[in-house]
Length: 204
Image: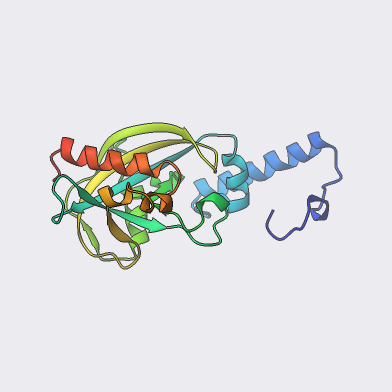
């Protein structure tokens, strides 16, 4: 827990477990009310990570692609590198397809409209990328990783431009050791499926 060396420093830590559960439930409901009211974007990181260890979270991964003109049958996929001090130790410095957890504010009247979360994912490039197509959902997966269980909707879209953060990588090159060792867990499969989807959907 951020800011505390151990649980004994938290006010009320010596209360019976049932009472602490009641307090936690009250705080969670208060946080949810703030999110619904637009006063808060998401749960505090400590709360989110504790929840995500055992309860499936809903995420969206966006496979942003450009043609790999130098290699026939390949595509370049946009990836970011996780920070060196990542909260999730196995993810530190690993390359990954950008994605976000679904937030309350991402909801749209049209259930097929992912524009809210797509805008947030594109924001990770810090400018420079422009969608040339509407993203297409090509797969939904249920997996368990270092953060916990996730239900992930995978989208793919062509983009133009050059990102200010992150970069494009050849899928074929990144699937070859030792480059593959730089990939975040399961992302070898993820980027291979981005490449397959790109060809199946006629995007390259």
